[in-house]
Image 1 (tube, rainbow, N blue to C red):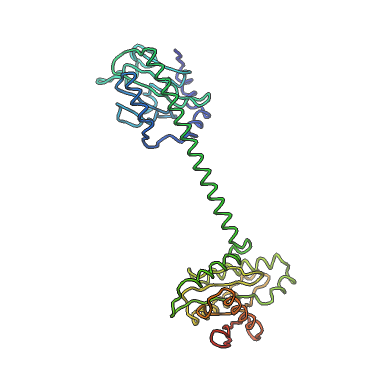
Image 2: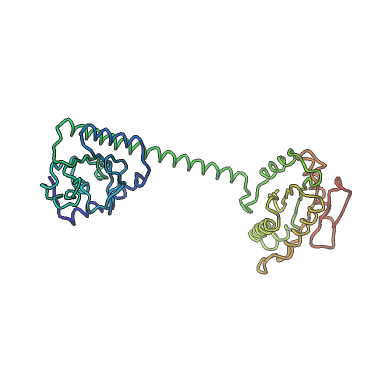
Length: 360
């Protein structure tokens, strides 16, 4: 029988490595589980006791993963009998709690009614660290025979097996979650332009194909905008490619802020952008194009090397095309038609295939 001063008992209980080992199992404050409940029922049956408990000892409490005969999930550590078992190596048996110096003054052993007079606990250990006990208790002093003590040890091993199995499954779920997150991130990266954060060309093509295959509203069939920054090569030549990258990122941000929630925008390549406007009339598409052009021209901050950015925009209605290739070609043609005009920092053209040649 091991009996240490209170401060040494406290040091053993509050050992950081022991507490971390207990925390690693993530067992505290979890719900009832049938496998653990069945073990305490079997322990009480084999040892012929009214109470059986699987408990874990924290800094200030003992918490019960499973219990029979108590009706509570935890008790303060200062009245815990199990805290003394933390100092043992295997089993702690107290045949009469009033006769043992560790428990003689314990209020649980001196209760007016149903005082706990017998205790037997098999230590739950992970490596060198004690986590808690599988214990049985009785209201009368008594002893356990060798078969009962051996059964208590065997059931203790089953508790540790369940704990390890539970931790294994938790780690498996964590790994699966991390793999799913990594896969989702890889998929996201495969569809995102790394510079602007917009959809890349493959992704915007997929979204546009989906829109083309969906039923179109004849009143608002949707439209596509093809945008190209004017004289972007001059920005790179005069201010360098780093400045050009900043212009592209700023352009992407301004367009995102200008477009509606359901609009889809992607970087088509270089300084070209493609915008899909679902459920939009051609007139609304022209208004959105003008708003984008004005925003890009007016809202660049003063410290940007190119404080004004012109843009050429080709506008095409989706109702005249059923293939991606034809739609993109029409938008691209309209954009180059707009680019050839002069006299304005922004140039917008409707695709000739849509309503004839219209310039804004």
